[in-house]
Amino acid sequence: MLSRSISIIGAGISGISCAEFALKLGYKVFLSEISNKDIKIKNNKNLKIETGQHSDEILNSNYIILSPGIPQNIEIIEKAKRKKIPIINEIEFGSWFCEHDILAITGSNGKSTTCMMLHEILVNNGYQSYLGGNFGIPFTKNLIRTMNNKSDRIVHVLELSSFQIELLSNFKSDMSCILNISQDHLDRYINMESYVETKLKILKFSKKTFYNNKDINLKKKINSDHNPNYYKIDSNTSSFRINNRSIVTKSGEILFNLEETNFVGDHNLQNAISACTLAFHYGVDKNSISQSIKKIKPLNHRIEYIGQYSNVKYYNDSKSTNLNSTIKAIKSFEKNVILILGGQNKGFDFSELKSFSKKIKLIFCYGDSGLDISESLHPYFKTYFKSNFRKCIIEAVRMSSENDNILLSPGCSSYDQFDNFEKRGDSFKKIISEIHYV
View 1 (cartoon, rainbow, N blue to C red):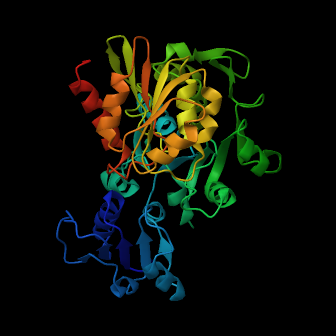
View 2 (view 1 turned 90 degrees about the vertical axis):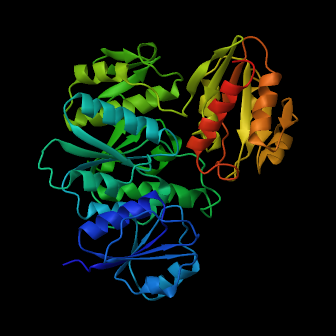
């Protein structure tokens, strides 16, 4: 019998959803939020809320659920560890009560697009697929939606960040997939090795794990030859592989080529092959996968085409919050890229972009880290710095000319001037719609 008293630290969307789910299960819930914001949650006799602090009352519980954006080294968590109170997260807690299949996807880049592709393939083939986790919809919110639903076609597609994997202990997934591993969150982890090991923890929680055979870090760390539950993606022995700009079956039959889809950039072939592989091993036939993938539209804020005005094309890639993601976006273009970078740098050396001198025409930088990024790139490019996001965008548009591609692909987190990358991308689109080019 599970203990029935929990504390939740952080009243963001996952914290509130977790509280609502726990209350439905009959738990006593103490919800603690460090800010003084107004918390919108239905009153319940088993719910107590504090704001403006994380008090010691948190310690009067059987479990502590830590929101993913909060690091484990805060004082109240150190106290909890000394008292040996189990510290888990919303994903772990929800998994204890999930009665349906879970397909989990992680990686440094491409998680959201791959999860969306897999979700759409499943929905198009009659499954009641629920997309959640780091995607923006809490797992526990989807669990509330599936309560008392006895369908045998329910499946949860979970996008998992390294922060969400950190505190998993008894989580189980039917399938998992690791897309890639590159530098990210070096402002949170002590080194790259620590970040990699956190991502690889997902191997312990899955019946079957698929991984990108072409990723150097994964090839070093995963030996599928000695574990029958590990499967390579994009190898000569896998169900599908990438050939030129197409995905083909093991026998060489073309499943689809990139031009038949609504996606740009060769990196989306890697996203697609991962989604297709999981769908195929979950039971979806090849023809249905092929038909589904051709219908899927790209996510907002991921190399999202905004439009063409005065022969200048605009692309919103606000979801790029690390350098490798920005590099993949740049590779999607032939030339004449006006690149917009900035926000809060997470420890990247942006001088790596110097190899794209033939593609990048100008670079505009903004935000907390914008000046440092601009100075690091100035030896290789014409760079400009405007602290304010709006002023930076307007200046980039002013200095553009016919046949240019203005690409917002910041390579940094958004939290200096925006609540999240979505609001940053929406602001970009609004600015473009307001200036005189439109």
